[in-house]
Image (tube, rainbow, N blue to C red; front, side):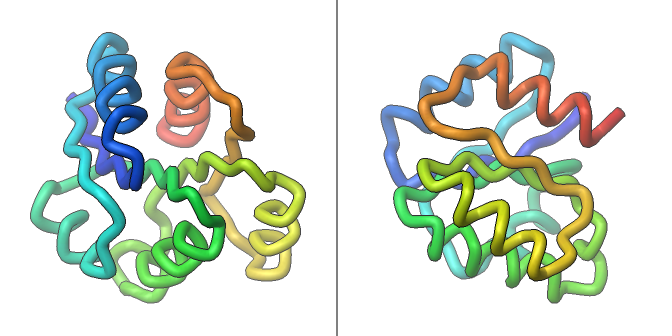
Length: 120
């Protein structure tokens, strides 16, 4: 079973997305914004990360923290964003690999499809 770390700063959305991903066969560990994302990824043995922070700056800082960790440089990441143009430009500037954007509003199916694309 694929393990997903979901970071979402809105508990109600995190709960709905957790249910949607579990229905599609993922094991999900959800938490709020945390600067210790790299430690959580290791602790949870996550195969992918889903970031849904109300501010893209928050998601961006977590993305950077993950990519700076040597064991997580290739980790598949899905970023849910209400500013997809800004997010896309930022990720292009970083030459980001193995990351997909899902614009808000979104569905659990869209996030699951992004994960499937990244995880193969």
